[in-house]
Length: 617
Image (cartoon, rainbow, N blue to C red; front, side, top):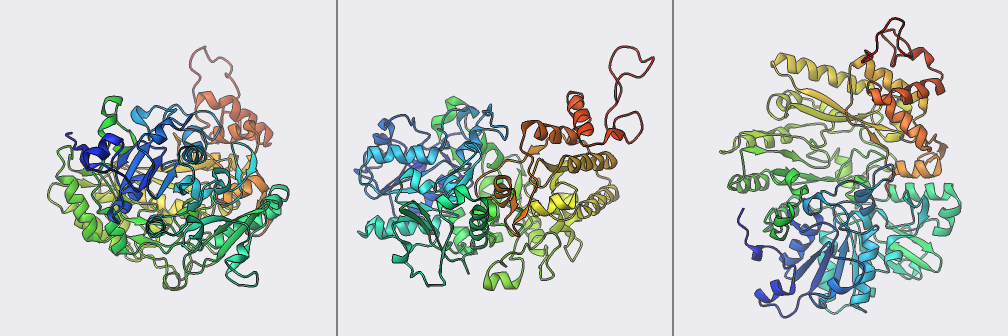
């Protein structure tokens, strides 16, 4: 691939000199390698600011132990903005078992160690050292999920708002295009950063939120304080459910939480981008490549998953409790137009490395193309209700016509051999398609050998804590999927995603799941341990032992041993899991599943007369 470095945003003083710049407006610091693609948040914010007329320079994965590299391009005129990248830096660096990950796909060559723990805080500190008095704005997923006092899995403690720890001036949460541009424009107009207290989708530090909103106002909600949520788990749960319920642009209110004498104030969420606005964001002049500085280091692996993929929506009304999407992107959907997606596909087709395959047409949930109902479109998401779980709302609009028309138009393009859908198909929503045409269409044209869906568990009580539908929906889907594959003479596998050790899941529930997998002939290769990330209702349950929706107690698997046993039960056929499975079955009082019968999960030992060698399953 031949690159024109001038097509990227500048990353050095030399780049700026080549452009004839004697100054620049905004320094954008990111914990990811610089990949100029609309799937990378830092690239999006950089291009949006550039399109608004600002000069933006990118500082990607800088050495963080001193301020040297932060000074290299000089002081920006307006502000510095910092993000950890597409993933929370702690999740990027550590597994659910708190062990260091072997790789970082958002770094050159996939090598780890290029970003610090709690990257947003560290970057903000270095920026403050480098540029005293300069406005510091933090954003991205890590900042968004940690905007209030939050349980931190890695510290096993409640931490302060990241806005306070970073000593930043503003925090942009959610999808930040509108807020970021407004911040830049108002700073350019001469406003002080401390006066920017009315921008939707932001948080700011204050001594008294009542200076913005009178205490009697129905627009202001005072959350339990840092001190309260640290010592009182019920207070933490109340704060968590309030934050979740107010994450709606149409009815969200001002939230405030005291941290001692300081206060974190959150303005209501920004309105989601409409179709024209989202089209414009995705059609900015991205190179769709990693910066050429990484070529000699093996490139950036994360680009390979998205280089020939299309994102057609944002937001998710599925609202799974373990997922951060509803707290970060919101439950309101934004969708791109067919024309915009076709133009992007046509530009991909012109690339010399395009082989005819669009790898994915997706988003948070691939088959969501419109609001769930007219009420949400007009009034916002229903408070305290889930559109799909445990049962679908009677007002839910499940029409898949627009999604199928989009796929048909894309696969009709000259130069396209196949269009796949690989990300986030919501199978329960797919089953509700009134025409019945969506699943056959996907099976015949858009599945690449296997379809991954996420039932997550089989026990209803556990599924309720997850915000997922009943397992019989998955059974019906799996049955229909198999029948349709048989009808069309195709052999495409169905791969279920499962979560072990989620709040609400006892060892007996894990055994029930193992029995279900046995009866369905499912052998999961990969199992995800529940990972308590900031901002989710499931993490609130993990920390408090309470379901914040009704304050009822929830069982929480806590010890490494129990988590290992629950995980092993899902993969009971693996020889290396045999001892853990036997221990789990004995502890659960299910020794009946240790034996030689058809229903047994494991064998107790070598039967009499069995010669040495491989022990048969």
